[in-house]
Length: 65
Image (spheres, rainbow, N blue to C red):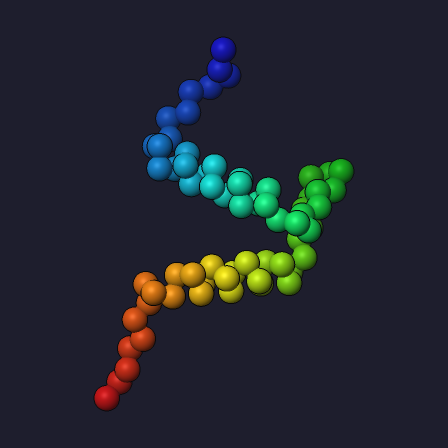
């Protein structure tokens, strides 16, 4: 029996699942007893750079002439 009904769209539910999966894949994630989180900034930087390089084909450089 569910406590509440989830009226969100499937797209939003899938985005949340993808986010949770990505956070769970962080190697340096630490959670404190009071619910705070700590993540190594270098790991985040490396993940962001890798994602940007992977999506580079979507970006067209604008060249002013």
